[in-house]
Length: 260
Length: 255
Ligand SMILES: [Zn+2]
Image (cartoon, rainbow over all chains, first blue to last red; front, side, top):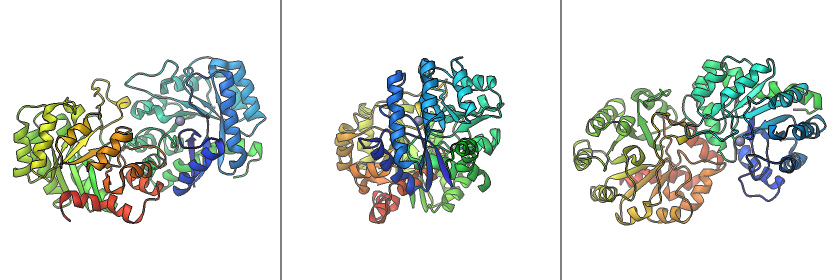
């Protein structure tokens, strides 16, 4: 069972969310991926306005309308627009079909504006996904480091939070979140550098490691290879490829009556 | 299956699972590889490339005679590179060489690069040019390697017409017309660092399966990525045969 934590409806040919989904799933099908999590629409906007957030979430809602048997939606929020984001959470998650929250690069995860968003998500058991990168070339102004996620998680013990990309430069990223048992490592979206998943399993335990691809910007192939090619047990591989994500999502799926 | 892009270790900044020659050979054989073209990480970082190349030749012989084919490093920005080229060819009997322009500090528009292409061509050596080794966002902060501009490549290839050139670790560039032109001029590309859903099929639709080579960049990268890219793009039949071994055999002059 493969569930892919990290997908976008931006980057392949297509003029509607439906066409994007169709093109994406054509490749996912070949790789045996059952379910994909989808967030953000098109184009990618680093610091979206409330109107832009709403448009992008509408695109994901449109994608879910026909593909809810294959896809889960996460609502794209921005701590730059906190009041709006809380309302958008209600529209898309509390009262809508989405099951998670995506936070990208508008503001660092250590900022206090994140707290009400995390509290809202936790009240619904919604999955919280925060992009992080630790770039030698320099981060964007509002782009989180894994250390920012660690700071945020320290204020919300017991709430699962996903450290997107494990910081990209994962050797630093994994160390930054190691001491926080509720912080999960997403392996998506970097080169398939050998040893990544082995280190994550060694330092965090396989139950805290999640497969995702960041497709279509990344190839399902290169990202699956991190898990398929790792020197880990078959039981750990299954956890990472889908069982961990399923376990994490079951409370909100049950709450919403979504059967898997 | 011929993997045209492996390296013997160690990498200076981390160990990789399977980065000793014997372990690498065992892992590649288990996955169905019958021959691998091996450069060396020493050849990327050491200034005494003559010694690195001699060790590479010996390691290939010891760990995988007939299985690992050594591709020595030559740095045309360093004095004495012609002697390195000569030794790769005449002393170590290597089928080709591997270049690392951004790690060795030269541009593809430099005259020495053009000279090297011509001299390698005259010796009928395969020339592999690695455009990248690692995402620049992840470089060690004390050793940031500048990105390589691939734009001068078509002109350099035209000036060394007939050279057997293989581009390794292409990320996004070259693209568009430059990419098509290079493929028409006989330049080959490997699968290792291309990205995006369906990337192998997309690249193949531009350069044709006759110009695509199976390269994994192991042990730096997980070997499985290259295999799964063919599956993701549903590449089968004659195209798959070209990529997995036919093209590499033709470059070696074996058919
Ligand atoms: Zn992403």
